Length: 130
Image 1: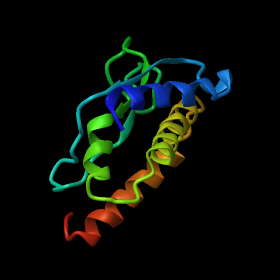
Image 2: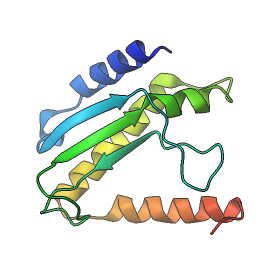
Image 3: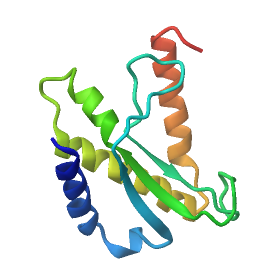
């Protein structure tokens, strides 16, 4: 999948999301770059929710707002090693995962953050990392 088609697919999917789930979100960005995970070879972050607002329980720099980023290059890196990579399913899963972070953040709920940390710890343990 080309970068342009990836962007168009993400935009089409975003248009299908009910407006109330997007409230307070300043933007969804598709970057052409990959985002490798620190200390983990061949592991990439597909997307992330950035919530640096002052009112956020995640903390950070106030005034930047809430954003979702999808990393096209990370999708490419993973797809290159999987013959059955389903681009659309992975884009949708990543987009909705990051939207869940957004909605939970607005509600002051860190459930998905806790799930992600638990999953990350199990993955690192499986790889023999701390």
